[in-house]
Structures are given as C-alpha cells and as structure tokens.
Length: 267
Figure (cartoon, one colour):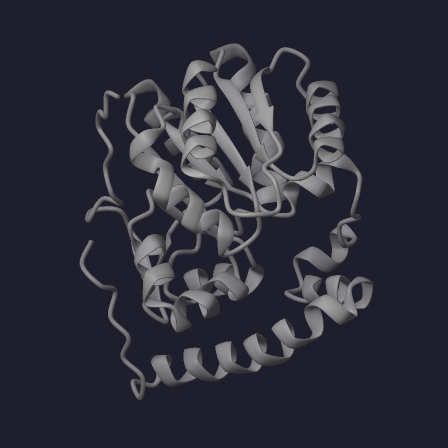
C-alpha cells in the first residue's frame, strides 16, 4: 500500500499548551481552509476535535496525549478551550466543534468534488445521517459508510475495512466512535488509509441523524452546554463532568500561575 505525505502536526503551526496538549490556534474558516489544502496537496493527517473531556482523558493517558500531539489539528471543541486561546492573545481563534464542522465541510466540498466516507454509529444512524447530509448538500459525494460491531475487530475484518475505505477513494473519513476510541482508531489506521483526512466528530453522527438533540443555540456560547447534556443523560455523564470539570479548572489555574508546567512531548 502506498503511503505518501503522512505528516505529523507541523512544528510551525500555532498551538497553545493546555495541560500538555497542543490546541491549534484556529477558527472555523481556518480549519475548513486547512483541510481543503491538505486534500489539494495530497497530504495525510488526522484531526482531533477536543473539548475538556478529551483534554482530561489525554492528561491522564500518555498514549492519548501523544495521539493528540501528533494530529494535524487539535480543534478547540468547547468554549473553555476557545476562551483560553483568546486569553493567550489569539483573538481570531474560536470554537471548532464537530456538529458544526461536519456540515460546513460537506457544503464546501460540493464544488470541489471531495469524497466522504462515514465510519461509526449504528446502521440506522448512518442511513439517517446520509439522508440529512444530502438534504443539506445535495451534490456532496458520500463514497461509502460502515457501522462497526460493538466488539474488537479481527485482523481480517480490519484489513477488509481498510480495503473498503481505500477502494471508495474517499478524501475524508468521518469517524463517529466517541473519545478516546475514535482518536485511537485514527492513530492506528492513519498510515494504512489513503484518504487525506481522518476526523473524529463523535456525537455529530447522532446529532445530524436526528437521534439526539443539541443544546439550544443561546447555551452553546456560554460554556454550559455540558449542563444540557448532563440533564439529558445523567446516569452516563454525571461522573465525567463531576471528575473532569473541577480538575480541569484547577489544573489550568495552576498552569497559568506557573505551579504546574506540563510540556508538549516531541512528535
């Protein structure tokens, strides 16, 4: 299998250090343009769309931290990360979250002819997602989709999936597996897939399929979108938010005053 131009995150790309994770200094237009350029130049990257949950998971896991720091982009998914970018002096930077990045890229890709592959979610979710994306962007090219089983794949199954995606000639592989599973999948498969971009967007699959609602627009910019999610799924999410949010605020404050000095490991 040909492996061309698989590049880790550029050392010249602007990032800020948040608990040892290099968060890309970007806004939505920057992210869209950068991905289009990667496709045009036949570069190969993966993108981590990361909020507080992803940062804290990476803080606890050296493996996941390395995966994030080797990504082509680590977009600021949540408002807390967008605020940290602005506090660092990057006033143009803003939130770049999966549920907004995905439809924007589908619209942008129509005149370009970029091809998309959908990986993750249930078969029902994928069919609904495909229908809604094509309603939004009728000329978008969805080259294929696959709903993986809820178990570890065999070596043969994995090889067949790699072949399926490569045979689709997709430019972008959208991965909806949730964190940290999707980040580990992208890192493990990046060298084997010929698509220019692998991008983990988690719940964006179910949101755009219409299976789960998103917080009202007015709440999304407040930094409290997590409260809406918690109220909807308290049993699944209460421990995540109880453990992550206070720890994130405390550690960021310690980093800001110099009592905690995490480093971004070399790539």
